[in-house]
Image (cartoon, rainbow, N blue to C red):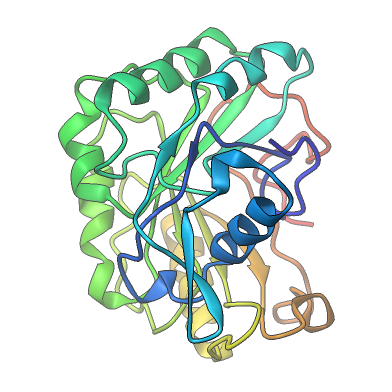
Length: 263
């Protein structure tokens, strides 16, 4: 767990699951693979054996580990936080039992001082299990869509019972010019970062921003990415875009009090 996350759209991370499987092109340069390999070398058993080295880089090998010992961590965080759930895995991976997913949701339901951001590429399983899960207002559910080939994930998300639904359009690998944003509350866009980062033309980002404005969906631009994402920054057309869902958020945070304010 990290209580001071460097991810621009959250404050903390919580990882009751570790390890994953490459599913689509957006996974190719996933930072979590590199991080898992590092953590394993540092002696964190949870990540040991979850990656293999190929082409000189660590890659997920399909081994997924659940970590019951991490379940109660948010209960000990009294001050409300924005918490990204499973930054190092995917809660809806086929290898994660429904019984364990229910335990994660139970913790989220029992800690209303926090707001949880759950993100998956396994949108089909998300929809399949949705009716068996509680959906308290402090759980935001999102899907990753890196290109037009994966827009169908949004439809699966839309059919869930999540109160707040969001999109992670990152790493953005192609134009998304005709999004159906009905029922969506928030969209995050960003370029790929790290070794081998693929480029992201400005037109792709502008199109998403303009669609969000038209549909009255909060828009958050995370980064341009590239090998040095800090140097590339996150300015789009002369400003940053830090919008947040207008639905109620219970967590207190450093973010603006008005969740729809763009700074």
